[in-house]
Length: 339
Image 1 (cartoon, one colour):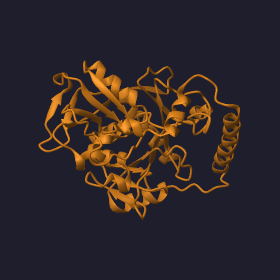
Image 2 (cartoon, one colour):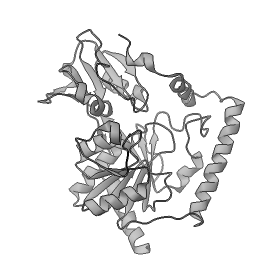
Image 3 (cartoon, helix red, strand yellow):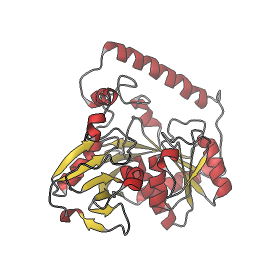
Image 4 (cartoon, helix red, strand yellow):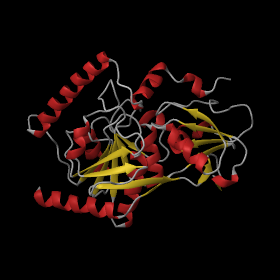
């Protein structure tokens, strides 16, 4: 039986070059320059009110990145939602619903939603945070539907940094502490959606897996010390209790981070890296050896309907200083008084 790793397309292997130090081909660099110019023109259109910016009734906190692929936004969103709830806030979450195949938007997301319709990350956020979640390509429409359906006094916008039509009170940029900005080039020569100079315009920066080196930066570490069975009764075991070689599956932006976490916990693993948001199907994680399979939570929400007792997810917990929440709420209050 072919493993999922055999299905990784050529495009994915080319994308891996973005994170290497060698310069891209000249043609790609030329296309990247044109892309950056188009991004700058669009950004200027919103900055100078040539394109309309829409406000919603409550403060909006953007959590985004400059690079394509995972940087740690989802665990940060979950952590922020949980911390805000502890402080008496009623946060909601809006997202694009990337690769969701719903026929109408926006869509409300619950812990039981089908990730094929609304995207895998929104389902995970709904499961872990307990917050109301609405997804749709138009973030403004998603915000308005969420506020019409739920009692929210603050909205977290997942991956909304480049969605300039939505007014934002706070911008949080998440940077992968290991890979940073890759080769430093914009698409298609590199992984950047906007030039690195955009970092100077955001309010706060979270470094995932690296130290904070500036006053506006916060260090985030992702902790994983247990695994939970995908099937009821959802038995939970410390990672230290898994001894034999295991299959490890990661369909996230940076699979190596997940594999390294497992190895640091003392596990011997057989790696199965997948493209980000890979659409797992029935039987695809059956390797025919009887070994247990560990996967990320994002993969778990997609494989849940096909799981057997040897399929486990490894939840990650974000660890940050609580002062980040103070900085966010302070800026939200400042924005309300200015508005």
